[in-house]
Image (cartoon, rainbow, N blue to C red; front, side, top):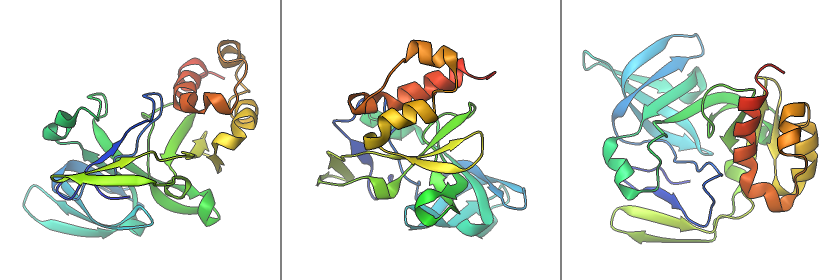
Length: 218
């Protein structure tokens, strides 16, 4: 996936608002912070310099004293980059989306190897959704000025982490099983969403938000 700002901006059409669109790492300087695997927090201006398999591989943080700290992605467990104000002018990023966040989570496509994956759901709640780069099929793109528009990404899938335990892949073809095994342990949620089929896949993000709101005490 192409990074946004300066080089390009990812704009996905034909995807309902209920789905959470990945924005990609910000490759120019923007406010933010990182947390290392040693639990050290470094704040300042954060720029992602390189990506490997859509995971940040090299990050630079410019601190308040103008010192630049270079970090490898393998040494980070969290990256937060606040979205610049001008990026909202496209109308494709909701104002409620304040930052691009990468968290180190087990990637089931890499035999559970921890990787920095872009988080697509807000913080909090029992279930978190992450961008599954290998689960998207790009069909069409075209350029306009400095922006790259990508259309019709099909079979959108997610890496899912529940209760900070083992991660799994969520695919459209497995929607009925996902409803039962991932979401079915909360009676309050099941009363609101009693069934789910492949036709409900575009509402999976909405269901996860509802689950996180309704099932906090389960």
